[in-house]
Image (cartoon, rainbow, N blue to C red):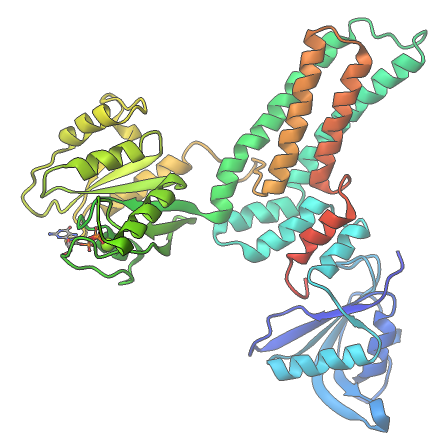
Length: 476
Ligand SMILES: Nc1nc2c(ncn2[C@@H]2O[C@H](COP(=O)(O)OP(=O)(O)OP(=O)(O)O)[C@@H](O)[C@H]2O)c(=O)[nH]1
Ligand SMILES: [Mg+2]
C-alpha cells in the first residue's frame, strides 16, 4: 500500500535520557538520508541493511548551512518487517522537549508529515500486519493500570482474542458454505440429517460465545479496577478507614458527624488487582443542602459499585440509617466492616445478620455468612485489615480466572459484537427447532459471522476505524 511518510515522537515529551522519533512510509529512508551523517561525515543512510542501527549525527542542511543538531543512533527497519509494515526509521536522540522538537521539525522540513494519533498502528492494521483486536491491545498495554490488565493485553496482542474469534468464524463459514453448496447442487450434496449436525455445532458455538461474554465482567474489573464504595452512616469511621486502607492521610477525619461531603476517590493495589476506593458522605436524613447533595452522591455511587464496604460503628446501636443502608445494598456485593471494636461493643455480628435478613430480600441466609461476611475491624488499632484483603481477593478472583490460558474480553466494543453474534446464533437454534428451511440458517449464520468480524476488524467501516485510532496516543 502506497502512502505518504509520517513522523512523530514515540516517547514522552519530557526530560528524559533519550527520545525516539519514528518515521514511516515510502520516503522514510530518503528523508533520513538527507539529514543523517555518519561519524566521518558521510551521507550514507540509504546503503544500510535492514534491521541495523547506526551511530552518527542529525544535520540540518537547509538554507545553505550545515548545523549539527544532535549525536544520535538511527535504526532502519525495511518493509514489510517493521511495526507499520512500511519502511521505518527510528532516531534515538537525546531526550528533552527542545531537542526532540528540533529533530522532529527537521524531519518534517525534509518531507515527512506529522502523524495523527495512532497512525502508525493504524497503518499496521491497514497493511494487514495486525488485526483490530491486536491494535486495540497495543493501546491497552500502554494504559494498563495493573499487572493483570497488562498481562491480559499482552496476550491479546499475541492473538488470544483474534485466534479464538477466528476459529469460531471459520466454523461458521464452513456451515454457510455447506448449506449454500447443498442448495445449489442438491443432487450431489444432501441436507438430509444436516439440521441435527448443525444443532450440535450451534450449541458449541453458543457455549464458546457465552464464555467470552461472561469473561467481560472480570475483564472490566481487570482493566478498570474494582469500584469499591465505602458506605455507612455518619461518624462510623469511613474516612478513617480510607486513610488506613490507602496508607495516606487523604480524607478529613473529625468526630463531627457529617464531615465528608464529596466523594473522594483513591487507588489501592491488592495482589495485582486495582481497587478504585471511594469515600462517601455518611448516609442520613439531613436538612443541610451541601450534605444532602453528598448523601445523594453516595447513593448513586453505591448503586454503581462493584463492591460496597459497609462500615458500622460497633459502639453505637444500629438505627434507621443503618436499616436504610441495608435496603440500599440489597442484592449487591458487599462486605460489612464492624468498626471501632476497640471500644465497648453494643452491636454484634448476629444482630447485623438478623437485621440484614429482615431488611434485604437478597436471599441472604444465616447459613451462608461467607457470602456477606462481617469483619470485625478497628481502624484506630489497625486490626482486621489482613482478613479484609483476603476476602476481597477471594470474592473477585479465586476460582474464577486462570490468567494463563483463559481468553478474557476487556474491550466493551468486542463484548457488544460478541453479544450480537450470540443473538444471531440463538436465531439459528430457533430456526432449527422450528424446522425452518435451510436458507434461514444461513442468513443468521452470516450475520453472526459478520458480527464477529467486527472484533477482528474485517467488518468495520472507515469511520469506526478512524474513531478507534483517534483515541490512541501520539507516536503510537
Ligand atoms: N475508637 C475508635 N475511633 C475511631 C475508629 N475509627 C474512626 N474513629 C473515630 O471516629 C470519628 C469519625 O471518623 P471519620 O473517619 O471522620 O468517620 P466518617 O464515617 O468518615 O464520618 P462522616 O464523614 O461524618 O460520615 C473520628 O473521631 C475517628 O477518630 C476506631 O476504629 N476506633
Ligand atoms: Mg468521612
